[in-house]
Amino acid sequence: GGHLPQPPRSVRALSPEPGALARTLARDPSADPKPEPTPHTPGARRPSPDPRPSPRAGVRGPGPGVAAARLHGAPAASAGTRTLSPAPGRRALDALDPAPWPWHPRPAPERSAAGRWPARRGAMDGDEIPEEEFRAVSLLLEHARSEEIDKRLQACKQLERIARALGAERTREELIPFMEQGADDEEEILVAIAEQIAKLAAFLAPHGGAEGLLLPLESFAQIEEGGVRAAVVAAVAAVAETFDVAKTREHLYPMVTRLGAKEWLPCRLTASCLLPIGCAELTPAQRAEYLGLFLSLCGDDAVMVRRMAASNFGSFVRAAAAAAAPGSAELSELKAKVLPQFKALGGDEMDSVRIHICEAAVSLAEGLDRAAVVEQVLPVAVQLSREGKWRVRWSTAVHLPALCAAVGPDTADNTLVPAGTALLNDPEAEVRAAAVANAGALLKTLGQASFDF
Image 1: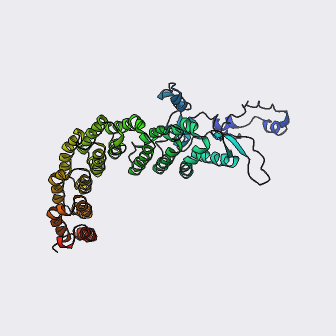
Image 2: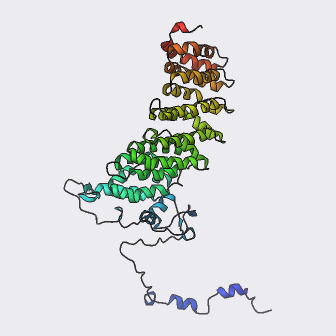
Image 3: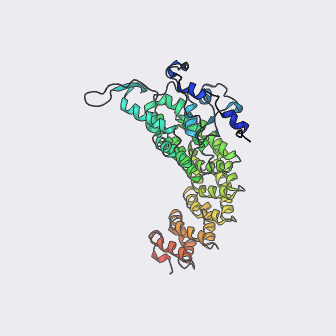
């Protein structure tokens, strides 16, 4: 009963030995051996002191050297050896060879007496660029590596500035692969990149290589967000304007046909919008394939695809009819296949598809001969004006003045004037409002005597 209780074994294992504390206090720290310094290669990136993973770690992407391997034809690493990347923008930049890029540290030159950095040469194919511009581009590219969306968005909105600093050659070899690999980024960033690609087309066209801009656009065309696809269509149209006939047939035509043949829904939606672009510069055989692809999209099982095809029906027929020679067999085949499909879309079970048919009727009236329009187009328009869904009647009231102007007063007096009068007396207020708003255009085209109010 006179001894003290012993602490548990785990506590005794952590207790210092007798005299250990005194020896620790009396130790001379200067006598401890110094750790060997880690060798560091000049210009190499030092390891980060914080080993914690990035918040966006886990996004599987291509490892370093994948973009360079694709550019030079070398085989890329297998999927099992890919590294984990912290962010889409950083993954794409890390995949590039950093040695030739201008954002690496350089000795800072001294300012001139005027307070500006001296100009330097080498980025714009021999042009002199001030050092201030290099520093600004350097900052933008560091923002492109950032994990913050706002900084990446700021950098992507100035890709044209970065391209002009890098020059045409390095834009083709390094910047375009970077944009292509960022297809999994946020929607607003992809929209910004697509908008910048439209500007890069004008920059690359004099130097060559503008067709490479279709590669990232084809990747973006598979995105589900409609805003991204709309920006892609606008960018493709801008890039196609810089193409000659050979490039349109060699690069644009294969991309559109690939997208239209894929099972992924966004690809077919984008293809429906891209078919009218560059149609006049294709060969008759390529236009025939375009026509078959467009008709298949008009009869697609997915309602979204049919709706998108119906909204682009008029623009495609107008472009295809303008490309065909008058009185040719190509034009006859176009009318023989397009007009039945137009009638089928006018009777589609979904009103979201039928709502676009009256607008398509305007384009058909402008692109086809008068006899075909009177026999097969105007009856569909009259049928739509009596549609049970008020949204379809509203669309007819909106586009009726343009349709009357396309067919002429004589034809409109007999067929379309009764439809316009009925729309002015429609039971739905929205339909009457649209008819009244467009009554002035109708009176200007047909004359007041044509209407019986």
